[in-house]
Length: 223
Image (tube, rainbow, N blue to C red; front, side, top):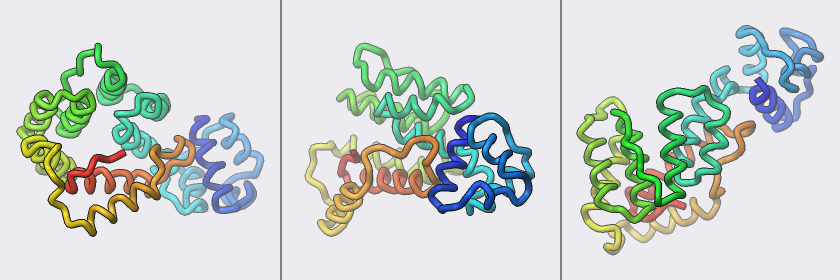
């Protein structure tokens, strides 16, 4: 409830709107209570607020964005846990919490991923960060065997990572220099960390996902 209020306030200020501007279906005082985490809007009021903020209700609630941000931040335990703290506990969030914890602690074994291709990809990234390329290949290959046909982005990431691991990450980059330079510029203009939970947007997550895919396809390590 508090996070929703902070997200509403952050977006409202970004658009330079007043609480009165959001009170088309309620009162300014109720908007104030929502922003302070003292109350929760009905679905109808939430939808109206979201429209005023040029968002969908789902984007405003942000659960999906926070989950994607946690996945993208799995190699940064502090940042990943920041997003997970605002999500309901599920089998996936529990696994992500265990995975990100061991990304910073080589003494902890990497937990076996659930039967989810994306979790296999993330486990492979953690193994690679720990310089365990055989284990990274094992996770990536197992993820591809799960046949993620309905998840093309995950499939591309798994295939690209496995190809890089098979070819050898130390091999010269075969990507055209112009594409590599473009990737460097994108990385140079992108924050090393995604924004805080109250201000993260779809564009932030989409940009980070694009950068991750380009990095894999270009054999150029992401930040």
